[in-house]
Image (cartoon, rainbow, N blue to C red; front, side, top):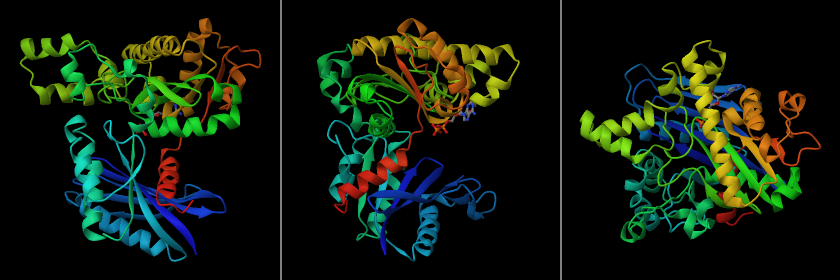
Length: 394
Ligand code: ADP
């Protein structure tokens, strides 16, 4: 009987899960899936390691299953699948660990209370991340749980990189740059030595380009700067988020358009980015396939902002050895990788078009002064590894 770890990533309307099993010295994926539409039209799907659907269930339109009902279904399903294995714990993705949690932590009532204090820092994500933790603490107090944070990996940033130019009192109260997508960057940093020992020891910029998008500067595998700040809306334009926006725009919207905090929140998180600029879609595939000039503008702006942030992060590093593309767009879109690499020619990136079309993993020429890579990220595996380590069974 081998050990198994369940990884949960709970959002406002879905719970994603992955099940890992300890095999020899490593953790292997067994199942993954999600329950989405928790409050509207719940649908459950589980897939095996090869991507084949192994279980499905749909609740009728209008069913309010909620996180509790979804967890009940998941728990029953996982129990049924684990006949041969022993569930040693659950690892959770939690967006905010504040300054306090610089690494994953085993959860008890005290830790949960501490994490609830960060809800105002990430009101759109933190409450949903914490709901399954609270429910499992109540329902299965004997089940070990570990929280893994999107912010922790960036706590190695120098103090100056974490600072806004605002009065010190606000900085001391926690209004500072935290950075996000840390589990993805940590995973990439963990596999980079296998691909590029020099970059792993040196200066690398990782581009996490998914629905959410950010970039991180790594020095010897440690985060020294990133594009996301106090919240995950800063930095690059994303599927529906603005990215960096002059704060004067917010004041203008309040004064001239009478918008309140909730209306502005909706605008900057849900109605902007690729969707807002194109007026067509937040999905990069749709935009790349479109002939509409607005789609072209959205893609142009996306690449332009990446180009500028790359220069900024290279400057923060004081040099550059490699760039690494990851997440949905970074792993799958040869067209975006090509544009970003061509824009970075001045830095010394020389694209190998054939390797890029083939997904690399190395997509730069042998002569390129700066190496370019396309590497798949795996935040779930990172969480499972942390959970195994924290629970002491590694
Ligand atoms: P999330 O942040 O939700 O985990 P993903 O990492 O899955 O998001 O990335 C989703 C994005 O990846 C979408 O914009 C989607 O269009 C894009 N994407 C996926 N495959 C491709 C592809 N072949 N070409 C271009 N974009 C792609």
